Length: 378
Image (cartoon, rainbow, N blue to C red; front, top):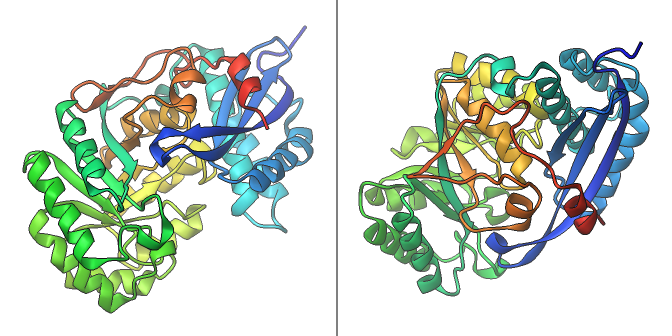
């Protein structure tokens, strides 16, 4: 007799797709498909970002994790998570290993929910809210400020409560590289959306590389525009500088999307340089890893935002995580139709008046179209 939930196979699918929210640039993610001996299937993803890291993630999943987990029960997700964590003791819990863990763990939670006929949020702590805030999030065009401002005008018309923009299309002219142009844009956006909509600006500190003195000056410049938070104003691993910046400015500091695991988030939080912790379940060791990090955020009496700017699977995972914690603020959300949000699944997420409804569908709550997976596979 076949054991319920016994894992038969784990397969990885690197995908390449054009991203409308990144001005048509090609972007990459890796999906994980876990199937049981009785034919049940769960899906997960990681935001592996580049072609080579997608291929490396596929190797880690299929040649590293799959042999460990085949024959295990998909109902014992925490056990499977620890088996993966134990496997990577030598080459580390970050990078490609974390990508692979994230995709497989997410797929296991999807599968467990389907096997038990429960939404994931019910399995990881219980639903505290019926809807979560969707934050419209785009890459700016700093060479065409009119285009960027018009995007925010449209967000306001669509009913979004929180809106975010950052980076840009052309590296030499991205946000953070021209003081006058940056302030002009932020001023115009605030004038366009009014004072009732919250605004977040993303500097992408790992690429722009402001020093502390510059960051203090620039953040203080923008205080008059009442940002909900400033995102990655400094290099994300410069914890000491974040602490100094937070002490000398009034705007809340958001960072964390480039962290990987519990230890990294603990170091970041303990330095006292963050107000809004960014968590990406497609990067920080999946839903299991994310729930552990959320407990840290709650204990520190901080807030978190879900950095979910990839596929509808990552969106789903973020919805469930936000629904189970009072510390959750909002989640990044692609405001326009895109391949990984609207083609990959037959039931894409739709915001209404700035919110996404938490679904009670078993598992993650989305249905993967496997023909689309094949269409975009590398």
